[in-house]
Length: 325
View (tube, helix red, strand yellow):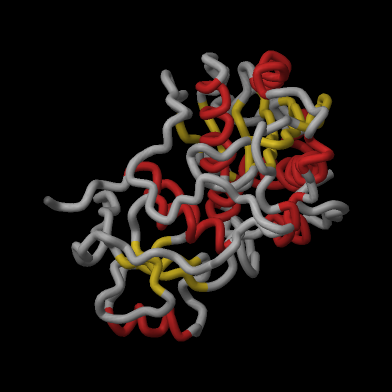
């Protein structure tokens, strides 16, 4: 019997660890604040990561389903699905009293919080745990921070990528051994507070740089990838422990767990300038592999450009400061 097996039943399991988890995955119409959930899955786990049950539902977003080529859910498939208010109570019962666990958890939490705000309810979630952050705490030897890499590390077989139920299953199966590794090593879990929205308006947030009110098109989510120029002046480099500011030039390098184009769109909607290369004017480089030898990371090092990973950047996008003047 290994140390990890001992911890499964022994009284030495960390008392400070949560008593239950809800491993969640949601598929959505996109990444913007007014995008909608189109499917959701929850695996409920006990304190030591053992599966108790699972649940899955489709959700009618009452709009275009977005990137069908990613999630496979067409308007026809979703037409007969329940609306979010109709599944909100059951969803809440699955989350109640548990730590929400997700891969890039800030995204899933924000989408869930917005849906509950629209339904004039509050999701019963107080803490979340991001498995990207946990894998970093454990220093797992992963080539990137995609779910498929975490799954491969623990020998979990993915059957239907970007299907909420299978993604949640894969994450639940990978989370349990990582939880036990953390317990065995006395690692503090990277728990973050979940602050629910208390009000909602259906009018788009301002500014909505590059926003398209509809993703309609002849079988295409986006009619064009051409984006409008950023209207804000570049305020300079990002400074650690300070918010991003509208007009900052942001470049991306390497693999991201969220589809790159969706991540870039979200940055533009926040008022940032997405740059295709790194120069002395670049405010920030976002990469999950800062030690790689890509041209962008090499230039960032030579110019002294600040670098953050995807999870940190996603957090920063929550509170982008307005442009000066």
